[in-house]
Image (cartoon, rainbow, N blue to C red; front, side, top):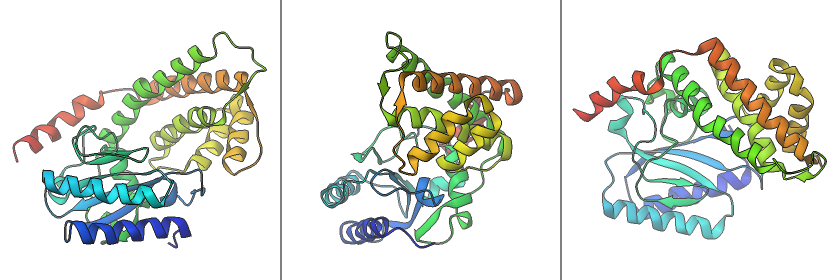
Length: 282
């Protein structure tokens, strides 16, 4: 896959800086997210990565990573988000929110819970991860169990995404439908949950653009909103209103309700427990 020019430049600098400051520490580097799906939009999309390390990272290593990403932030305004995982941890897919050096919205965090460490990231790595260093991700990243992926998706929909719906409804509670509303939150709420629903239904992860098309088919009452979000993501001058924000929140609730009705079952935390216990004893 040929990377967009700005992404290629960013990842080349990332690799060279790692080799200078942490020689031999990062043996594989993969891109996921919009780049992996061929849905990258320069100036709008983040660049998401997963780095596989040859060893557990010491405090000194983590300080060196902070310097690496400080350098990257000086030359690129693109949010370069991701995590560093030592290879030994690949044996068991992550259970969600595990500790690792990571970046969120371009901000480096030397430690702490990393939301990107979850079984869906592992599935995405295998399905569409782009190797900028190392073997094809499917060669070293094990497949998460279908039941674990399904339960993680259901729990994420019922916690994070329902929380987004509540926030959106609260934000517009006292506003008139015709008032203008910022684009980003409408796109996020309209395209995000259908991506998870698609994975539950089809077993594969799709881009935000494909999720919008899927939403229009699976939830036709929101087809117009989904279509306008897809066009806005493509760069068309689409305006959104408070009514759209309310419709986006309603779509989140509909997606969650449909997913729970069709696939509800064992909670992810219960399925993940054996893997977490196995990791703790190794």
